[in-house]
Image (cartoon, rainbow, N blue to C red; front, side, top):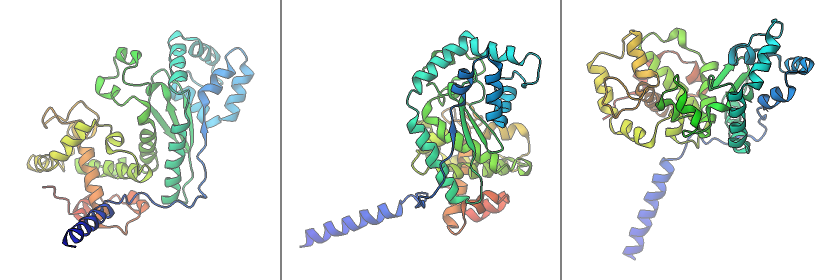
Length: 337
């Protein structure tokens, strides 16, 4: 009888522990959410060709906003009305490197359904938290290793050639892309990159971030936005760390925070101080070489998580509209030990 009682207590304790660790971001969706539209623009662009100019004009008429963003900003050949525009289309579509990249993309993304489903699901969570906000249209294409994700008003563009895997041979020859960035150039990173980029687009606080702390909390809010839209994604994917790097941050959280305070970094407005802790890098200058880059982002993320834990009545929309970064820190009672 006593053994059975002990066993029952253990089971109850385990169940309570599991309940306490419940993922609060796993909200119940209504089932009436709209499906975000995903356009395989790259396929249509190459299908239009370059010999029949009317097909290119028709494509521009079909997707006017994104077409201009793609030709001006992504592949940088200018606009439809420019004299050498169609020559630029021809050069892009017949370039041997572009054709090789296109073949690799077709092989790597022969089945895009899992990624499409994940994107659609993420934007269903977006609708739950922001019911009055419009959905973007998502476009995929190849860009010749241009920016991974581009955004504009109601537009998200994904360069699939930036997600061909860490071992993809062309990446090793890109002088503009260091090895620590190549680690995140795989298709498992697409959805979190899209959600992060959309969060920055919809909630741009860049004019209100004056010092390192402001930038840390702002980035923490964006990462919490990613948490909410991707409740099943692992933290290492969301921030782009290896599991070893993530574990290092957890083990050294208190030391990093203490170092920032001791060196009076939190309120520094020096651009290089902000870049050091916020921007991607192989490691964080001033911290041990084992540290990953963007540790300021990671700490800001933990502050915002702590704030939301202390204030469960706060909605995601209220959080994203709150630019009082100092108050978020104060109210979080953040003090790692």
